[in-house]
Image (cartoon, rainbow, N blue to C red; front, top):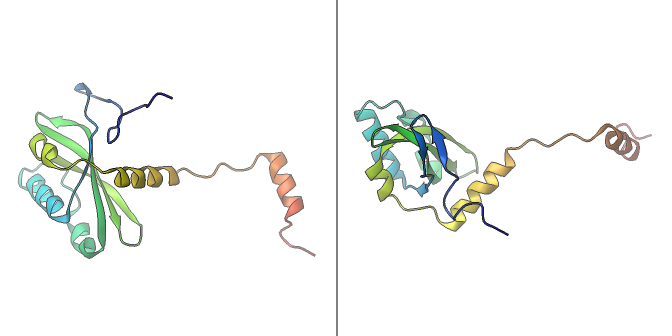
Length: 146
């Protein structure tokens, strides 16, 4: 079986600048995230993270991932930042970072990649039963048993 993409990478990303063959997923510490959010704000880039939300949830952060999306301007990457909280919840937001800052961050480890894959897969909704399956289910498990 042929692997669709190498460990730690996503497929090529088409965007308005053509196709950039990045797609790395990086792992961040809270200190890394603070530094990158501050730099984005200082440079007045549009992807500035969520400083207020981060301040409110700092003590609950367990994992932070940064994924390349596209090159926003020359040398500045638009990234998706995924944050995971202690209770398993979290979310994502955009953050612009320089290519140099992005390249200095460590690549995601296998455990982080598996965690991200499971989180992604869990967001798909359950496909409802076909009509015949629903009828069989309703017969087998009546809602108001006698």
